[in-house]
Image (cartoon, each protein chain N blue to C red):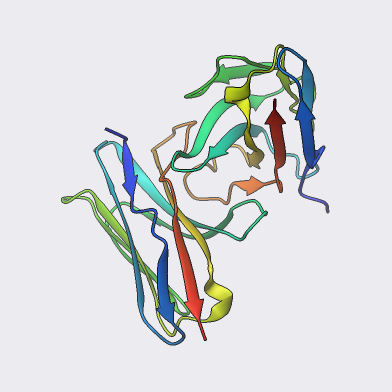
Length: 111
Length: 115
């Protein structure tokens, strides 16, 4: 079993929809949780990060961490065609030197 | 400020050939790393370095060598390429101590095919 599990999709939604992307993990030592966005033929870029449990909001994006359930989510409100990309969750322990990624979820927002 | 630069962008090798994937960053980051990305497998860590002269293995190190003689450069060497090494390779860097709460800066990848 992988340390981080993520549904690969693809996920197709109409423009304006609310998108929910999720990851589960097994290592209770993970403290830092991130979401990266990767456009086709590009390297991933950091979208959001959170420390420990709780919510964080940035514009149309909200990241949630539930450490008791070992479950993290990324919500995208009012989705746009420009949000079409692969979204990767990533996590690490405090002071760790390794970032563990999920497999990524491919999202397509259609007009 | 170029960020993380990877060369070449594309490469085709025959089984058994060797090559070096280049990675350079101009942000004075201490931490540098190499990942490979395969369908259904996500990004997997090959090797990483926390500073010049210091390297360590990641999740999938077999068949790859690295060295770190300067802060800026972190080349990845394939000594004898195998078809299983066909993948997209990403180099990434982050400032010291920042892996959890600072962006990992990625290059745009090297697409390698081994026939």
